[in-house]
Length: 310
Ligand SMILES: NC(=O)c1ccc[n+]([C@@H]2O[C@H](COP(=O)([O-])OP(=O)(O)OC[C@H]3O[C@@H](n4cnc5c(N)ncnc54)[C@H](O)[C@@H]3O)[C@@H](O)[C@H]2O)c1
Image 1 (cartoon, rainbow, N blue to C red):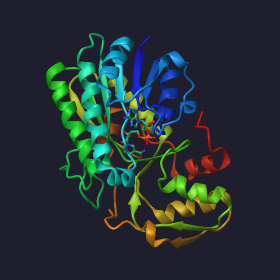
Image 2 (cartoon, rainbow, N blue to C red):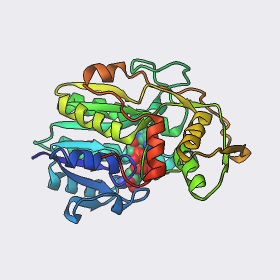
Image 3 (cartoon, helix red, strand yellow):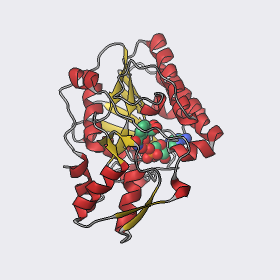
Image 4 (cartoon, rainbow, N blue to C red):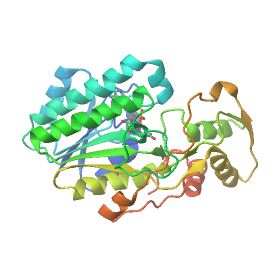
């Protein structure tokens, strides 16, 4: 049975990925400092959960050697863009130094067969059409910059070890158990509080929303199929929705109308109007396509907010 170490798995995406791997026979181990994640999002025993910080080089070396994973999935990061902008040193340190520590410890393993790094669509510049992986990178903020550094570190890691290495550029994930105040959990929170006049920032930007169950399946299939080299894949749905369209999906889910009020404090000064993945490379490589529409995912959040699709 393969041992899979997932850093940062007590967070939003990890809490969907762990059950996807466990139900398919993998034995998952988690390293997380619980700064944003929560222990109770994970249904794994304590001896497979390490409470630790990826910036602690000694701990990372010791725990990765002890676990000796066949796969490493590196999700741990500071990821909420407003927090990164307010705390640039801390974010860059965790996202870059932490990645160096994980990859350095990984280099010493004899059993390692795959490494997957969670990068982001934020490595791309502002582009108004679906973005393929070949598009030039040019991040707008410290978060995107720190993830681009992580991609470069993955390249170095691969050149040195020849261990199959996968860089995934995640677009906007949505689903149950979100840990950061992104658009969908923010609308959901206000609706659950009983509000039907909701406060939002810019209404026109369009984003590619991919459900965490689709994302987790794509990641597992990629890890299973990717056997040589290093490559980069967009992980998105290939469809864009505006903020207004997301609110309309909530209206359909609750069967009531919702009034939007623009809160000037929430309006971002620098804003991308479009961010959509070209997912042709992913869908050609894998027998996979996104199965959960925005409407279905939002209906599920309203009906049963804490659980994933079976
Ligand atoms: N959610 C998205 O839409 C999205 C989009 C693009 C990329 N990503 C990337 O996917 C990964 C997972 O994102 P998420 O949405 O689950 O975020 P999240 O904040 O819910 O999860 C990140 C996890 O990392 C942990 N962590 C943070 N700093 C740590 C440290 N120093 N040491 C150990 N653990 C630490 C947190 O406690 C948390 O459990 C991140 O790398 C993120 O950058 C996410």
